[in-house]
Amino acid sequence: MGRSGLVDLEKHFAFYGANHSNPINIFIHMLFVWPIFFTSVLLLYFTPSLFNLPHFELLQFGNNLNLALNFGFLFSLIYALFYVCLDKKAGSLAALLCFICWVGGSSLAGRLGFSLAWKVVLAAQLFCWTGQFIGHGVFEKRAPAILENLSQALLMAPFFVLLEALQMFYGYEPYPGFHASVQAKIEAEIKRRQDKKQNKIS
Image (cartoon, rainbow, N blue to C red; front, side, top):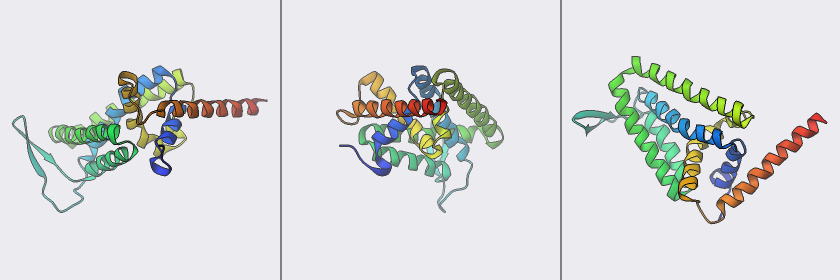
């Protein structure tokens, strides 16, 4: 049932899980990962359109909402498609969240304007990243996954915390035996790291 390569969900989840095994650190990431995604898309609203197409005009509570097919759209689309490839059910939910972030980020960016938006984004990103580094340093007591594999950590983080929440509150798993298999890989990886650390000390 598992997959290989780029869409090997067990491999991705085990890598991320081995760096996020402390419940408090996991909770901190649940709080801060999606706001980081949202504010990233918000700032990308100010990038130029990728196609020579007019902005979409949508009506939102009586105000015009401009949706441009720019890097914010491309950023959200790549994440959304990748998550659907990983798991159709949870991935579709994650893709919907990506779309909501794009629409919501575009709406807020249009209202704030660039001069204020970048300051809001900077403050939010600093706050969220600081919280996560504290989670790793104080509770996880190991370096963040982003320092070990930048692209994988950034790409998997939103989906990881969503899967954690779905499993925690609804007992969801992409297929039967998924979490048991992943947990075994996580424990094996943690043990490997501990043995490696112990060998260095001795």
